[in-house]
Length: 377
Image 1 (tube, helix red, strand yellow):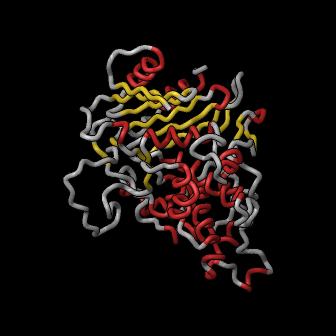
Image 2: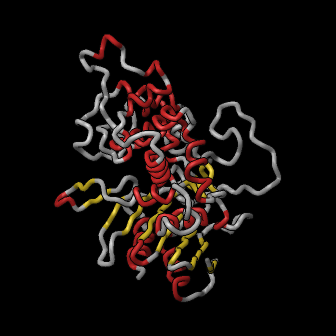
C-alpha cells in the first residue's frame, strides 16, 4: 500500500482534487482520504491553525457511520451461529436480563410482545421513532453539547420494551438511532458480553483498527464528578466546533446510544475498514471468518421510496452507478461530521472527516465527499 499526504500545498491529480474539495467545505479542520487501486492519498486542511498532533493522525467522531460497525458485528455473530437475523430483539434482551421478559399475565394478550427482530433494528424497519419519547426532556438543556450523557443503556432497553411500534415491524422504513442502539444491547445480552468487547474482539481486532476508540479520550469524559487525567501528551481526539467554526465542543459521550454513534477513528483506520469492504478476501481480513460478514453487509436487503429507488444493505446506503453500486454512510455529532463510502467496481474508498457540525441548508461536506466517490473512475 502506497500513500501520498498533502497539507495545503499546490498539487495536481488526485491530491489536487482533494485539496480543492477541502477548500470547498470551509471547516476549521478537515481530512479527506482516498484509497484507489491500492494507493492512498490524504489531504489535511482547514481554516484553523494546525494542531500539535497532525490532523490525519487524530481520532474523529464519525457519529451515525458507527452503525456500519454494529451491523458488521451482527453479521459476524450470525455467521458464527451465535444468533439469527430473525431473532426477536425482546427475547434476546431477556436472555441477559430475565427481568425484561414479558410477565406471564401479559403473555396471553400479547400486550408486552414486541416482535421486532434484529434485522428490523439494523435496517430501520422496527417501527421505532428516531429517539425515545422521554429522551428529549432530559437532553434539551444540553442539546448542543452533550445530549446523550443522561440516558444510560438500561433506560434505552426499558424504553424499547415499553414501546408500541408505530407500524408493524418490517413494513416501513424510519431512520432510528433508538433501534440501532437497542440492537447493540440485544447482542450484548444474547452473548453475555458488553457491546464494546464484542466489537473489539470480532471487528476492530481482526481488521487491525488500532486507532479506533469508543469513548472520548480523557478518562471520565461525560461522567459527572470524574477526575480528568493529567497528562502533558497532546490530545489525539480531534476537537469539534459549533456551526460558527470557532466555538469548541467537548468530546461526545453517547450514554446508552453507543452502538448508534460512539466510534471515533483516525482517517487511516477508516480507510483500512473500507479497504476490507472493497476486498473481503484481501488483507487484513484474508483467512479470517470476518471475510464472510464483510460480504454479507454488501447484499441488498430492502428498497424504498418512489419506484424503490433507494436501496439498503444490512448497514449501508447503496446507490447505482454505470460501473456498479457504491456504498456509503454519513454521520454527525455535536461538533464533527464524517462520510465513509466505497465503490468496488473502481476499487475506490473515501473517508472524510471535519471538525464542524452540519450547517443546515448550506452544508457542502457530504456532497463534496460523495462526489469524490462517485466521480472517481
